[in-house]
Amino acid sequence: MLSAVPAWVFGALALVSGALVFRLDSMAKVTFALLASFLFVAGEVLLLGLGYLGVVLVLMMVMEMVIMVVFMIMYMMNPAGLMPMAMFHNTRGSAAIAGGIFIALTVGIFLVDWPARAGRPPADSTLALGESLMGGQMLTMMTLGLALFATIVASVVLATHRGRYDRFGDDLRADHPDDPIPGGVGR
Amino acid sequence: MTEVPLWSLAVLPAVLGAATIVAIAFDVALSARAGGRAASLTEVVVVPLREAVRLLVGQRRVTTAADRVLWRTGVVTVPVIALLAALVLPLGGVAVADLGVGVVWFNAMEILAWAAVWMAGWGPNSVLSLVGGYRFVAQGLAYELPHMFALISAATAAGTLRVGGIVEAQSGVWFVVWMPVAFVVYLLSAVAMAFRGPFDAPTGRDLAGGAVEELSGVDRLVFQGGRWLLLVVAVAMSVPLFLGGGHGPLLPPWLWTVLKTAAVLAAVLWLRRKFPTVRMDRFAEIAWVVLIPLTILQALAVGVLVLTW
Amino acid sequence: MSLELFLVIGAGLLAIGLFGALTQQSVVMLMMGLELMLNGVIVAAAAFWYYVAPGTADGQVLIVVVITAMAVEMAMGFAVVTAIFRARDVDMTDMAADLKE
Image 1 (cartoon, rainbow over the protein chains, first blue to last red):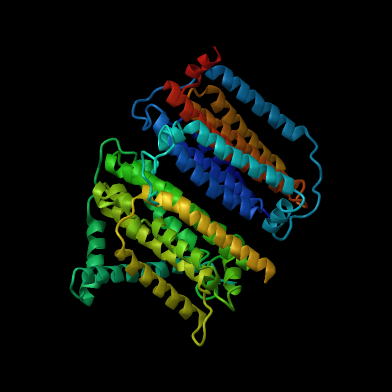
Image 2 (cartoon, chains in turn orange, cyan, yellow):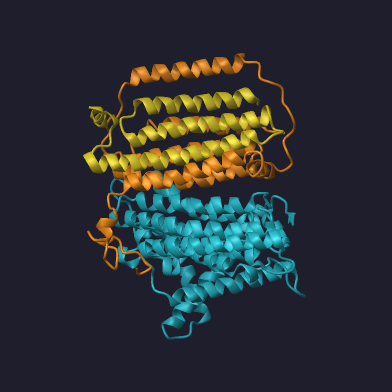
């Protein structure tokens, strides 16, 4: 059966590191505080018997946060937090909204009569997920795949400022693309 | 595959540490041979030990406005993730924890190296060391996807993510026979992961040491030792994934595992001296334009074979 | 140790993330708030799967969807920040507000 102590500890740590994200000065520390919050949530997911999703969460979030930290350092002023400064707006209103929503959700959580447990956890939750994604939820999986592909195209289009005319010249006749970073294939 | 009791948690670091020391000694011997002379046994054993002791008693360098929390975290994370990844590493049918999602666990732990090296580069508030950290992130983006497809090939062929199951699936034909591309790419990415050999740009001499530039004393020992440990663990994992684990005639499984690991490790250490350092911008294009399509084709071939055969 | 505990943790993460998303001036920090909100959703989805409907894999599929949403959100967010920064040299939501004029 699940043990309550690690669930409480992971939950509390996830909340604390989540709060630290908006308290720390250094952008690098902020990003890794967010990563810590994700890792503790992955711990909760593992505790709930979802081995595959918990580990994949660790995998995804580490990659995502390391990429995020590069952007944090690139775009934020004061990346190392050496000059304390405030970057908030509308703190009081936001606190009221966030606090109100938390209270409303908590009240709801304890008032709602949650349905009784239906079924038992499968012996291998990874297998169950795979069969579901490749069976009944195939449409979900395909939609996710399309969404990810659209994201790749859209983000490259948005982020780059160089088109084929910059790379191959005005008449597109250059033998080699004129790239700022040459690459290794030797085109 | 049997799991062993909890005390094996203490044995694992000792075994891996011993393997790492042997690997370092072998590397020192290779260095001496590259220098045109035969290395004596005392030199091979004494030089690394003396260096370790020197680092242990050495003083820590202090830099201005260093981010100590992230710096220390990054340094300690390197050996820790190597050990955590090794939890699923079987030694002839015995692993500390034969997790149901072993392959994914291994991958998740080694990805933490990205965060670790970046933090170690960021921490000391020094330009060259931060450049080294960034170089490793760029290198990581290059090697990680081919690496994942190589892992997927092995897991697909066995029909399980459990490392023990992958070993059992190779009782007949080893996976290296019908997925040679995945095997080679796996070893490439294992070396890149530990930023050794031709992939040592993150700690390159042009950066005066890069990510390890400001590390001194016990920090340097932990970080560099962790790097070696990571290399040994990553290379050792190729044995259960592609080389049949403990399967082999006559000898007991654990001995086969040790022999195969030693052979692959020696080959990797010898081969990596044959190539100059690869810049990560070049490696990135090679990885994305050549290696990813190759490994996808490999995974496709494996998938088709599994379905039809 | 119950469904309520996990849901309260999820609600807490959602509230913290919402606070961050509303207060932060920088676009990148705003995205961190959004990610924290999704983090809370993951806890809640995993808890619902375990305590309410472990027989089917729908709860797990929901987590997969949320993880994908996070990846998409981050990729598009950084692409937009890069585009805005390149065009106007700003990275703050307040400064980008004159886009509407």
